[in-house]
Length: 280
Length: 258
Image (tube, rainbow over all chains, first blue to last red; front, side, top):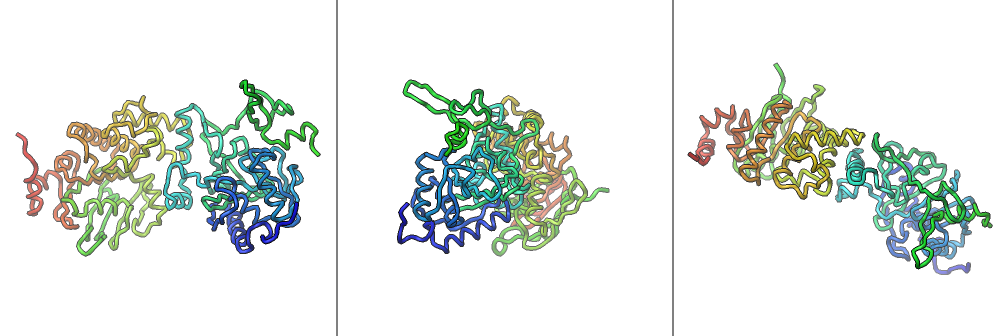
């Protein structure tokens, strides 16, 4: 891709990147703690990944290889745009192959292919505060985190069971990180929650609008909250992926024509394609 | 025999010179109901906030003995200790139930919150306990999944009581618990309170300006004026034989319906 002049490497200026890196170091040191940072205006709207893109810009280097996914797919607008953004501003290599990537920026999925040590997963986060639904005051939620007052998190799960007979929260399912901080894992499906536990890769979270960073270092305990008599469960499907036949992946329901016909396919496009032998 | 569970000595909190709570000393004994009466602005509610650790005094000492006989100095305790006490040993019943309830959470969730706050993690147990407490405060247990927003004022107040008593606190603070309720609902609420307090053997500090409530519930009475305690004693003694001029006025102001 042609080089862009007039911009610093990876778009952000060096001072900003240093500020974000300082925040990330603190976030890694205290797993699950939300670290405030001076979020910058990015050339895309809030909610499209401004937090994730700033984290990626702060950590990306010449020799990195970037993969961007949006709900597991490499080929959707958001993923393609952010991938091209870094190809242009940082001239880094990009890939769709999970194994080849050193940095994976993700919007709400964890790749099906197990990550390895040395890889970094960057999450885009809309609302970083898991206690926000019950406590609108920021001063109060910070105090609750500081004092580990997490009883109210179970009130939400209680309400789910009382209303639906089961824990109906299907995404942004709250987790306890390293036995200390309750964290919102960003709106990943709860199907992906177990993958965060003891993951060899570094997981970084950036919330652009709320201006918060947090992290899960490699090999950290991440436990989904639950009740003794209603244990945490992940989603299951009756069918299999209609393209690759996988029965152990997160499936998307896709409408295929205007007659209401639909099919279930893997949400992770790279995983599905490589199972079908189409991987380059 | 037993020691007072809460001891206050010369507790002062001044918002402005002469305003607030000035040098109040009192003891709360296990199982007793202590009434605090006085006119608006006499420092009743301030005293209640000081005693319950929601506010810290300018000077004076506050000592609390919990169920494990641990002695807490409330003035020098950390905020985290005070909040722990607030969840386990204390109950606080607000005048307006909307201050003490989570209106968007079902009645069962409201009662269960304190249980979950102290580490209860079994849904079935929490729900059974919530149903038991709804029955205890005379709310139909079938309304467990209704939100308090659709309850009447009296039911909300009773739900607030259930929510506070579910973890069996040792000391409950009530700020005008019957304010804003009509007379028949007040009477029912007082009956419920009297029964629960008696059955559970909890201590209560109740702030009220309603002499009828004081006479019905309180074992002992403190009369406050301008931030100071001007008279104290057994409820019947204070109300039948008031010494201070202000108390005499206060007692005389009760409407006699004969």
